[in-house]
Image (cartoon, rainbow, N blue to C red):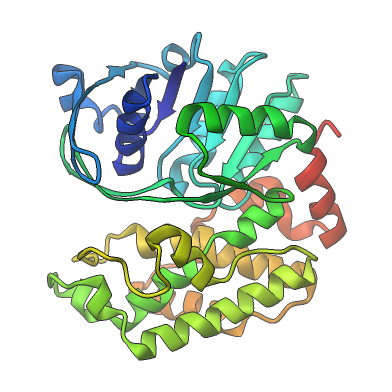
Amino acid sequence: MKVAILGSGAAAFGLAVVLCQNSHDPVLWSPSGNGTSDLAQTARIMSEGAIEGSFPVSVAKSCTHAVKDADAVIIALPAIGHRAVIETLARDLTAGQSVIISAQSSFGALLLDRELAARDLQVPIVAWNTTLLRSRKVGGSTVRIATYRKKVDMAVLPKTLESDGTAVCEALFGDRFNLRSDLLAVTLSNVNAQSHMALCLCNFTRMELGEQWDQNIGKTEAVRRLEAALDDERMALAAAFGRVVRTLDEHRLLTHGSTSAAPIKTLGPATLETRYILEDVPFGLVTLVTLGDLSGTDMPLHKAGINIFETLYGRPLASENDLIPALGLDRLRAEELGAICQAGHAG
Protein backbone atom coordinates (compact mmCIF):
# COMPACT_ATOMS: atom_id res chain seq x y z
CA MET A 1 0.00 0.00 0.00
CA LYS A 2 1.01 3.61 -0.47
CA VAL A 3 0.92 5.26 2.96
CA ALA A 4 1.16 9.00 3.53
CA ILE A 5 2.77 9.84 6.87
CA LEU A 6 2.06 13.38 8.04
CA GLY A 7 4.95 14.23 10.35
CA SER A 8 8.72 14.03 10.43
CA GLY A 9 9.69 13.22 14.00
CA ALA A 10 10.64 9.99 15.70
CA ALA A 11 7.14 8.51 15.48
CA ALA A 12 6.87 9.25 11.76
CA PHE A 13 10.35 7.93 10.95
CA GLY A 14 9.79 4.79 13.00
CA LEU A 15 6.50 4.01 11.29
CA ALA A 16 8.11 4.55 7.88
CA VAL A 17 10.76 1.98 8.79
CA VAL A 18 8.17 -0.61 9.83
CA LEU A 19 6.10 0.02 6.71
CA CYS A 20 9.15 -0.48 4.50
CA GLN A 21 9.99 -3.65 6.38
CA ASN A 22 6.44 -4.85 5.70
CA SER A 23 6.77 -4.13 1.96
CA HIS A 24 4.65 -0.97 1.88
CA ASP A 25 5.46 2.38 0.27
CA PRO A 26 5.66 5.28 2.76
CA VAL A 27 5.84 8.94 1.76
CA LEU A 28 6.51 11.55 4.45
CA TRP A 29 5.34 15.15 4.61
CA SER A 30 6.74 17.62 7.11
CA PRO A 31 4.38 20.58 7.70
CA SER A 32 7.35 22.89 8.31
CA GLY A 33 9.65 21.18 5.81
CA ASN A 34 12.46 21.17 8.36
CA GLY A 35 12.08 17.58 9.53
CA THR A 36 12.62 16.06 6.10
CA SER A 37 15.31 18.38 4.69
CA ASP A 38 18.08 15.78 5.12
CA LEU A 39 15.80 12.94 4.09
CA ALA A 40 14.96 14.71 0.83
CA GLN A 41 18.63 14.37 -0.09
CA THR A 42 19.27 10.80 1.08
CA ALA A 43 15.81 9.28 0.35
CA ARG A 44 16.64 6.66 3.01
CA ILE A 45 16.01 6.35 6.74
CA MET A 46 18.69 4.70 8.84
CA SER A 47 17.25 2.71 11.73
CA GLU A 48 19.02 1.55 14.90
CA GLY A 49 17.93 -0.50 17.89
CA ALA A 50 14.99 -2.90 17.69
CA ILE A 51 15.00 -2.62 13.88
CA GLU A 52 18.28 -2.07 12.06
CA GLY A 53 18.91 -1.19 8.46
CA SER A 54 18.52 1.39 5.72
CA PHE A 55 15.05 1.91 4.27
CA PRO A 56 13.96 3.81 1.13
CA VAL A 57 11.28 6.47 1.59
CA SER A 58 9.79 9.31 -0.42
CA VAL A 59 9.33 12.91 0.68
CA ALA A 60 6.33 15.03 -0.36
CA LYS A 61 6.41 18.80 -0.71
CA SER A 62 2.78 19.25 0.33
CA CYS A 63 -0.02 17.45 2.11
CA THR A 64 -1.90 17.26 -1.18
CA HIS A 65 1.07 15.57 -2.85
CA ALA A 66 1.50 13.09 0.02
CA VAL A 67 -2.16 12.12 0.22
CA LYS A 68 -2.82 11.83 -3.52
CA ASP A 69 -3.39 8.16 -4.45
CA ALA A 70 -2.51 7.01 -0.91
CA ASP A 71 -4.41 4.02 0.44
CA ALA A 72 -3.94 5.17 4.02
CA VAL A 73 -2.84 8.33 5.82
CA ILE A 74 -1.13 8.35 9.21
CA ILE A 75 -1.01 11.48 11.36
CA ALA A 76 2.21 11.10 13.35
CA LEU A 77 3.31 14.39 14.85
CA PRO A 78 3.11 16.22 18.21
CA ALA A 79 -0.40 17.03 19.39
CA ILE A 80 0.26 20.76 19.20
CA GLY A 81 0.24 20.37 15.41
CA HIS A 82 -2.80 18.12 15.08
CA ARG A 83 -5.46 20.78 14.54
CA ALA A 84 -3.67 22.55 11.68
CA VAL A 85 -2.75 19.28 9.96
CA ILE A 86 -6.24 17.81 10.41
CA GLU A 87 -7.86 20.90 8.89
CA THR A 88 -5.44 20.72 5.94
CA LEU A 89 -5.86 16.97 5.49
CA ALA A 90 -9.66 17.21 5.50
CA ARG A 91 -9.52 19.14 2.22
CA ASP A 92 -7.38 16.50 0.50
CA LEU A 93 -8.98 13.20 1.52
CA THR A 94 -11.13 11.26 -0.91
CA ALA A 95 -13.50 8.31 -0.61
CA GLY A 96 -11.78 4.95 -0.20
CA GLN A 97 -8.90 6.23 1.92
CA SER A 98 -8.37 5.49 5.62
CA VAL A 99 -6.79 7.63 8.33
CA ILE A 100 -4.81 6.53 11.39
CA ILE A 101 -4.04 8.96 14.21
CA SER A 102 -0.87 7.96 16.08
CA ALA A 103 -1.65 8.66 18.77
CA GLN A 104 -4.93 10.43 19.32
CA SER A 105 -4.88 13.49 21.57
CA SER A 106 -7.90 15.42 22.82
CA PHE A 107 -10.32 13.75 20.42
CA GLY A 108 -8.59 14.91 17.25
CA ALA A 109 -10.49 12.19 15.38
CA LEU A 110 -13.73 14.03 16.15
CA LEU A 111 -12.39 17.19 14.55
CA LEU A 112 -11.42 15.34 11.37
CA ASP A 113 -14.79 13.58 11.30
CA ARG A 114 -16.60 16.92 11.63
CA GLU A 115 -14.55 18.51 8.84
CA LEU A 116 -15.27 15.56 6.55
CA ALA A 117 -18.98 15.57 7.42
CA ALA A 118 -19.11 19.15 6.14
CA ARG A 119 -17.95 17.71 2.78
CA ASP A 120 -20.44 14.81 2.96
CA LEU A 121 -17.46 12.46 3.13
CA GLN A 122 -16.98 9.58 5.53
CA VAL A 123 -13.85 7.43 5.82
CA PRO A 124 -12.56 5.11 8.57
CA ILE A 125 -10.69 7.20 11.14
CA VAL A 126 -8.58 4.99 13.39
CA ALA A 127 -7.41 6.33 16.74
CA TRP A 128 -4.56 4.64 18.60
CA ASN A 129 -4.18 5.17 22.33
CA THR A 130 -0.39 5.36 22.03
CA THR A 131 2.35 5.12 19.45
CA LEU A 132 3.20 1.71 18.01
CA LEU A 133 6.89 2.37 18.66
CA ARG A 134 8.99 3.95 21.38
CA SER A 135 11.61 5.73 19.32
CA ARG A 136 13.92 8.72 19.20
CA LYS A 137 15.24 10.66 16.23
CA VAL A 138 19.03 10.85 16.47
CA GLY A 139 19.85 12.67 13.24
CA GLY A 140 18.34 14.23 10.17
CA SER A 141 17.66 10.83 8.63
CA THR A 142 18.26 8.39 11.51
CA VAL A 143 15.87 6.95 14.09
CA ARG A 144 16.58 4.70 17.08
CA ILE A 145 13.72 2.33 17.88
CA ALA A 146 13.68 1.23 21.51
CA THR A 147 10.43 -0.75 21.62
CA TYR A 148 7.99 -2.23 19.11
CA ARG A 149 4.83 -2.59 21.17
CA LYS A 150 3.11 -5.95 21.17
CA LYS A 151 -0.37 -4.45 21.39
CA VAL A 152 -1.94 -1.01 20.98
CA ASP A 153 -5.54 -0.09 21.76
CA MET A 154 -7.53 1.29 18.86
CA ALA A 155 -11.02 2.41 17.92
CA VAL A 156 -12.63 3.40 14.65
CA LEU A 157 -14.85 6.40 13.97
CA PRO A 158 -17.58 5.93 12.95
CA LYS A 159 -18.13 2.56 14.58
CA THR A 160 -19.96 1.33 11.47
CA LEU A 161 -16.59 1.34 9.64
CA GLU A 162 -14.85 -0.62 12.40
CA SER A 163 -14.04 -3.64 10.24
CA ASP A 164 -12.54 -1.47 7.49
CA GLY A 165 -10.30 0.44 9.89
CA THR A 166 -9.16 -2.73 11.62
CA ALA A 167 -8.36 -4.41 8.31
CA VAL A 168 -6.14 -1.49 7.25
CA CYS A 169 -4.19 -1.52 10.53
CA GLU A 170 -3.61 -5.27 10.34
CA ALA A 171 -2.63 -5.13 6.66
CA LEU A 172 -0.01 -2.49 7.45
CA PHE A 173 1.32 -3.67 10.81
CA GLY A 174 0.00 -7.15 11.54
CA ASP A 175 -1.81 -8.47 14.62
CA ARG A 176 -0.86 -5.76 17.11
CA PHE A 177 -4.19 -4.16 17.95
CA ASN A 178 -6.84 -4.44 20.63
CA LEU A 179 -10.16 -3.10 19.36
CA ARG A 180 -11.86 -0.96 22.00
CA SER A 181 -15.53 -0.04 22.16
CA ASP A 182 -15.16 3.50 20.87
CA LEU A 183 -13.12 6.68 20.69
CA LEU A 184 -13.83 7.54 24.31
CA ALA A 185 -12.45 4.21 25.53
CA VAL A 186 -9.24 4.78 23.55
CA THR A 187 -8.82 8.26 25.02
CA LEU A 188 -9.23 6.84 28.51
CA SER A 189 -6.72 4.07 27.69
CA ASN A 190 -3.81 6.49 27.14
CA VAL A 191 -1.49 6.28 30.15
CA ASN A 192 1.30 8.49 28.80
CA ALA A 193 0.22 11.73 30.46
CA GLN A 194 -0.04 10.26 33.95
CA SER A 195 3.23 8.32 33.62
CA HIS A 196 5.12 11.34 32.31
CA MET A 197 3.61 13.60 34.96
CA ALA A 198 4.87 11.40 37.78
CA LEU A 199 8.29 10.88 36.19
CA CYS A 200 8.93 14.52 35.25
CA LEU A 201 7.50 16.10 38.36
CA CYS A 202 9.76 14.00 40.57
CA ASN A 203 12.84 14.45 38.34
CA PHE A 204 12.22 18.04 37.29
CA THR A 205 15.54 19.55 38.33
CA ARG A 206 17.42 16.81 36.46
CA MET A 207 15.67 17.99 33.32
CA GLU A 208 16.20 21.66 34.11
CA LEU A 209 19.94 21.15 34.71
CA GLY A 210 20.36 19.09 31.54
CA GLU A 211 21.52 15.96 33.34
CA GLN A 212 21.74 12.57 31.67
CA TRP A 213 19.56 10.24 33.67
CA ASP A 214 17.99 6.82 33.21
CA GLN A 215 14.20 6.81 33.35
CA ASN A 216 14.22 3.37 34.94
CA ILE A 217 16.39 4.61 37.81
CA GLY A 218 14.39 7.83 38.11
CA LYS A 219 11.17 5.85 38.47
CA THR A 220 11.57 5.12 42.18
CA GLU A 221 9.05 3.54 44.53
CA ALA A 222 7.74 7.00 45.41
CA VAL A 223 7.24 7.81 41.73
CA ARG A 224 5.41 4.51 41.27
CA ARG A 225 3.08 5.35 44.16
CA LEU A 226 2.20 8.62 42.45
CA GLU A 227 1.67 6.77 39.15
CA ALA A 228 -0.63 4.30 40.88
CA ALA A 229 -2.70 7.06 42.48
CA LEU A 230 -3.04 8.82 39.13
CA ASP A 231 -4.05 5.50 37.57
CA ASP A 232 -6.76 5.10 40.19
CA GLU A 233 -8.21 8.45 39.11
CA ARG A 234 -8.14 7.44 35.44
CA MET A 235 -9.80 4.09 36.15
CA ALA A 236 -12.53 5.83 38.18
CA LEU A 237 -13.09 8.20 35.25
CA ALA A 238 -13.41 5.28 32.83
CA ALA A 239 -15.93 3.62 35.15
CA ALA A 240 -17.96 6.83 35.30
CA PHE A 241 -18.31 6.69 31.51
CA GLY A 242 -19.01 2.95 31.58
CA ARG A 243 -15.84 2.12 29.63
CA VAL A 244 -13.45 -0.79 30.27
CA VAL A 245 -9.76 0.14 29.93
CA ARG A 246 -6.41 -1.39 30.84
CA THR A 247 -4.62 -0.56 34.06
CA LEU A 248 -1.13 0.94 33.92
CA ASP A 249 0.39 -2.43 34.86
CA GLU A 250 -1.54 -4.17 32.08
CA HIS A 251 -0.27 -1.53 29.63
CA ARG A 252 3.33 -2.15 30.72
CA LEU A 253 2.91 -5.89 30.41
CA LEU A 254 1.86 -5.54 26.77
CA THR A 255 4.57 -2.97 26.04
CA HIS A 256 7.56 -4.52 27.82
CA GLY A 257 6.41 -8.02 28.67
CA SER A 258 6.71 -7.05 32.34
CA THR A 259 4.97 -4.74 34.82
CA SER A 260 8.33 -3.41 35.98
CA ALA A 261 10.73 -1.02 34.22
CA ALA A 262 11.52 -1.09 30.52
CA PRO A 263 14.08 -3.81 29.71
CA ILE A 264 16.56 -1.39 28.12
CA LYS A 265 18.07 1.86 29.30
CA THR A 266 16.06 4.89 28.22
CA LEU A 267 17.39 8.36 28.92
CA GLY A 268 14.98 10.86 30.42
CA PRO A 269 14.53 14.37 29.00
CA ALA A 270 17.59 16.60 29.48
CA THR A 271 15.65 19.80 28.84
CA LEU A 272 12.41 21.45 29.85
CA GLU A 273 11.47 21.60 26.16
CA THR A 274 10.04 18.09 26.24
CA ARG A 275 6.84 16.60 24.90
CA TYR A 276 6.51 14.72 28.19
CA ILE A 277 5.22 18.00 29.62
CA LEU A 278 4.56 20.47 26.80
CA GLU A 279 2.38 17.94 24.96
CA ASP A 280 1.11 15.69 27.72
CA VAL A 281 -0.05 18.43 30.08
CA PRO A 282 -2.29 20.41 27.68
CA PHE A 283 -3.39 17.48 25.52
CA GLY A 284 -3.30 14.67 28.08
CA LEU A 285 -3.94 15.85 31.63
CA VAL A 286 -6.26 18.67 30.53
CA THR A 287 -8.32 16.26 28.43
CA LEU A 288 -8.81 13.89 31.36
CA VAL A 289 -9.73 16.74 33.71
CA THR A 290 -12.26 17.99 31.14
CA LEU A 291 -13.78 14.51 31.02
CA GLY A 292 -13.82 14.48 34.80
CA ASP A 293 -15.80 17.72 34.84
CA LEU A 294 -18.27 16.32 32.27
CA SER A 295 -18.86 13.14 34.27
CA GLY A 296 -18.68 14.62 37.76
CA THR A 297 -15.53 12.64 38.55
CA ASP A 298 -13.02 14.28 40.87
CA MET A 299 -9.46 14.34 39.45
CA PRO A 300 -7.48 16.12 42.20
CA LEU A 301 -4.02 14.79 41.33
CA HIS A 302 -4.44 15.47 37.61
CA LYS A 303 -5.59 19.02 38.39
CA ALA A 304 -2.70 19.50 40.78
CA GLY A 305 -0.26 18.33 38.13
CA ILE A 306 -1.53 20.94 35.67
CA ASN A 307 -1.28 23.70 38.27
CA ILE A 308 2.20 22.71 39.42
CA PHE A 309 3.63 22.45 35.90
CA GLU A 310 2.08 25.80 34.96
CA THR A 311 3.78 27.34 37.99
CA LEU A 312 7.12 25.68 37.24
CA TYR A 313 7.04 26.86 33.62
CA GLY A 314 5.45 30.23 34.29
CA ARG A 315 3.02 29.77 31.42
CA PRO A 316 -0.64 28.74 31.02
CA LEU A 317 -0.09 25.26 29.62
CA ALA A 318 -3.77 24.32 29.81
CA SER A 319 -4.71 27.07 27.35
CA GLU A 320 -2.34 25.62 24.74
CA ASN A 321 -4.84 22.86 23.95
CA ASP A 322 -6.52 24.11 20.77
CA LEU A 323 -8.63 20.98 20.14
CA ILE A 324 -11.00 21.07 23.12
CA PRO A 325 -12.23 24.62 22.37
CA ALA A 326 -12.45 23.88 18.63
CA LEU A 327 -14.76 20.94 19.38
CA GLY A 328 -16.61 22.61 22.25
CA LEU A 329 -16.09 19.47 24.35
CA ASP A 330 -16.44 21.34 27.61
CA ARG A 331 -20.00 22.32 26.62
CA LEU A 332 -21.20 18.79 25.87
CA ARG A 333 -23.06 16.47 28.20
CA ALA A 334 -21.39 13.14 28.94
CA GLU A 335 -24.13 11.30 27.03
CA GLU A 336 -23.67 13.51 23.96
CA LEU A 337 -19.93 12.91 23.92
CA GLY A 338 -20.43 9.16 24.26
CA ALA A 339 -22.82 9.09 21.31
CA ILE A 340 -20.65 11.16 18.98
CA CYS A 341 -17.60 9.03 19.85
CA GLN A 342 -19.41 6.09 18.28
CA ALA A 343 -21.50 7.52 15.46
CA GLY A 344 -19.47 10.56 14.47
CA HIS A 345 -21.04 13.76 13.19
CA ALA A 346 -22.80 12.18 10.22
CA GLY A 347 -24.58 9.76 12.54
